[in-house]
Amino acid sequence: MRAPILYSFRRCPYAIRARMALHHARLQCELREVVLKAKPSALLEASPKGTVPVLDLGDSVLDESLDIMRYALTHSNSAWSADELAHPLVARNDDEFKPYLDRYKYFDRYPEADQQCYFDQTLPFLEALNDAMSASSEGGFFLVTSVVSALDAAIFPFVRQFAFVDKARFDALPLPALKSWFEHIIVRPEFLDVMQKYPAWEPGQAVTLFASD
Image 1 (cartoon, one colour):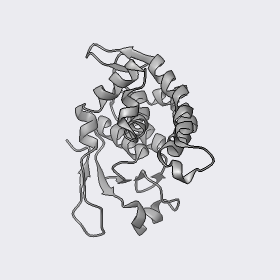
Image 2 (tube, helix red, strand yellow):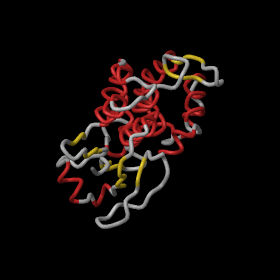
Image 3 (spheres, helix red, strand yellow):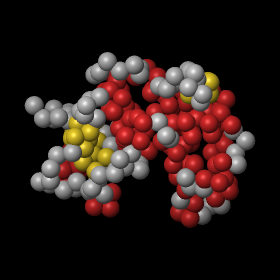
Image 4 (cartoon, rainbow, N blue to C red):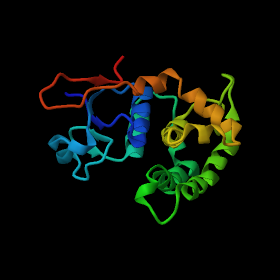
């Protein structure tokens, strides 16, 4: 029985959170790094909408990142709980923050307002995250609880994308708990592990196993 196939793109925040859950759950899969400007036909056959991440299980396909996270956490002995993904902050991240983040990052595509306006629209959510932080025994912060959880994994990749639009502007935010959380998670081994670089997948190349022991 073949391992599930994960179509991914290294910098995509949706793909990052899926990889974080799969890595935490130690669910081995075949990783296929995708070039979004040249999507392989195998990806489009698995999921015609052509977005990543996609997890091809053989008898079914998951093409939403939260569904992949839930699958990983319910098919393993993970300490993370899939129930954490139902937290209102996850919905706010996906439905409120991400659209403003896209406008802030790609402001030239949205000329109806300037970049500063889009930056300002992200602040209520970032402030909510800062207020939701709980101090950990490791010296940093995590969302809601004092230990890293699926909630952190579901949201962190989007804050990372936001921060690197203009790191100096992010660093100047008066949100100390949020910034401490960011600096703490970005150097954690489980995040660094899922951010390794892989060559673009092509049919016939050697299999790259992800989340293998």
